[in-house]
Length: 114
Image (cartoon, rainbow, N blue to C red; front, side, top):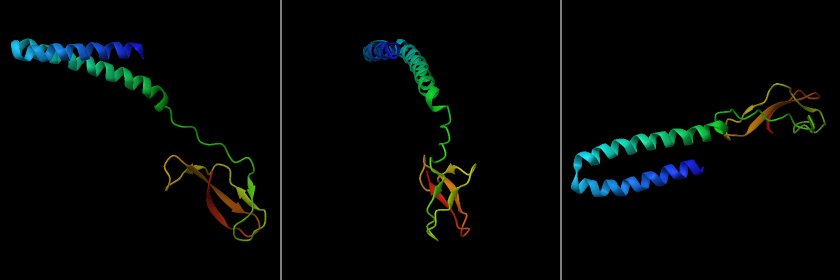
């Protein structure tokens, strides 16, 4: 992070210099703009690489519930069972997951949030 801070301080100082050059020497100002643009692009690429290291990895699929059997909302018997391999991202809530449950007593199936 200190390297990025040093680069940004350098850009800030060069912007002050650019302000003075625009009045006195337009050609030198254009050259400085090119250098600043290159330096900012490099700093942005470096920052994206640092952020991308954590963000590029796809979040792991959540673990199955600790208790894979719940009370069925239809027949109220304890037979509403989590179905292995059915975890998916919720269509209504981004970043949340749900899994398919099937009641062994009445056959009712539903997607439940994890």
